[in-house]
Length: 452
Image 1 (cartoon, rainbow, N blue to C red):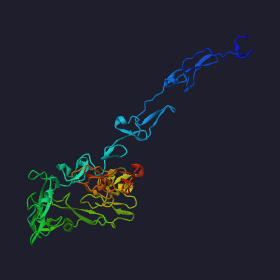
Image 2: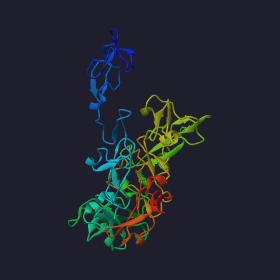
Image 3: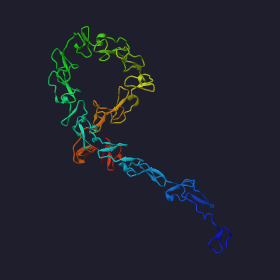
Image 4: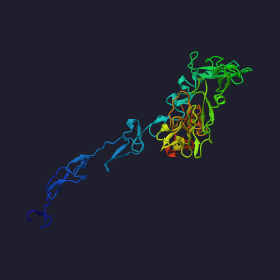
């Protein structure tokens, strides 16, 4: 026999101490220690793992959280939501895409679109609406095609869609009178067309003794630019044909020539102008400084008040005018750290090689624009279009757009940077490096994925 609290050890005559926890059964999240049930430390098994839970340290099994955002998956070892492998489901299939490998979803774009990092947008040469195409092209089956379907497809000044072609009223050569051969578009509707035209004379189309005054007349009539007698004498301003001329005491002259108003040596330059007209005349003037009329350390600025002797401001040559707000600065300038400067000079914002030219605007902002040489092969630099809204301060305010669309039957009919879709060549996906393209493609020097 063994003493109390002892039991046989399985040998002849051998005894061992009975385990105090031998007959103790503890609930999940607890364990037996010296015969008593105590709480398991945080994260230990303690019967919780079988239910995909963990011990919270207070004697309770808490379930593991498996719900992760699309693009992430739950890792049972690290017990955390982690980024999915690229192209996996991970909840993205329900949204029409696949995991991007960065903890998000990448939507599967249509074959005429590409992923710009946040959304699907039309590829160059492809389109969703005609607004994605350059003027003279319209959108059909997601491809920009030459011609037009409706007036809205035409984006040039005074253009409308006529028999599938964007045309202006002047394209039909309506000005047949040799005295008034110059045709100009007009916003006045004529013969059911929302745009019209007017004919003007030219400096050489009037007879001897006459000059061309293209500022008068009725729109859409052959004599809208009138030939008027060339005279030195006058009774009223309208008798004078010279640019910015008024009638002074029966003689045609400009305000600067006749009045000679700019007598301050700091602002000796006189400029004729058609605004803020003094004394009831058609034309006025303003005085301003010159590059040599300001004192040492100053330069002649760009702003002025019409008809004032100090119309051209003398500014600090090194830094520009001092300021506390933008209203203290000249046109085209803003207040930067107390100094008036032009945005293009201060910010140098136009770093995109496709839109490298910075242009200051009169509101103190800027626009980046392309040039004839900054667009890639097969593109042209599309300039401002009358009546079309453009966003200031954006890299695409002057767009590099596809120059033309070629017809095709297979990809081999297109250039390397294009592919055949619906019978027309459209540009392939854009890129900045080879990794942006498929495994059998590389990134071309013009920024498009091409076959290796």
